Length: 275
Image 1 (cartoon, one colour):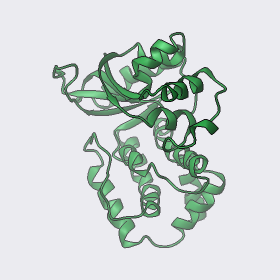
Image 2 (tube, one colour):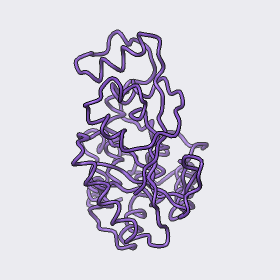
Image 3 (cartoon, rainbow, N blue to C red):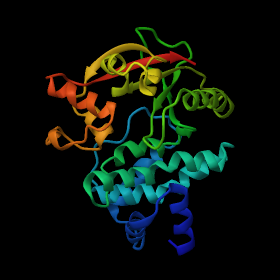
């Protein structure tokens, strides 16, 4: 890959600094057989609207980083071919750079332990629209009812910003126009969210927070135990070790840790709302 095309790729994926140097090294030699197999797996999913990420594989973390890098221009061309703006495509694919930076913060090294999550972006049906990401997929059962349209939007919350009601409103407004325009044959009238932020305990303890405001938008369908999610997304630490060393400077940090101190278990809330 030429220097100019590499620079364009890193701009598209929002990759910079030490991560850019490491990624450039991966691209400096021809792809291995494992990387080519990973690229083929990504190609097979492009435009098929998968709900789940790729899990089982015979490639290493580095193989999947390289595959994601090499395949991203194909996804960008797919987006643009649908009439989607290059800016929206770049905002969506820029999660690659964000996840590389998070990995460096969590593990103090180059890597991408969330490579599987990013295989959803590479299928071409997950978009960053303002503050939120929206994942267009076939409908699952929502609150015991099957959505008549057969399609729904999974809502995800990138870490890089606030969660004010105005920002969230703007994202949902953009999504309500975006998907009917570019995917008119896949009408989604429901949005779903699976997140520790929808745990009712959090709404109860921080009722005036932006997180609580976000959670109250959704009708809560059920909860499932997810002991480590709140710690990971609040502190970017894998596991529950050395919790006494984590900061308790904000109300959210204190609530997350105090619940565990008291013997409680954080949960994922699974909710939905009408678009």
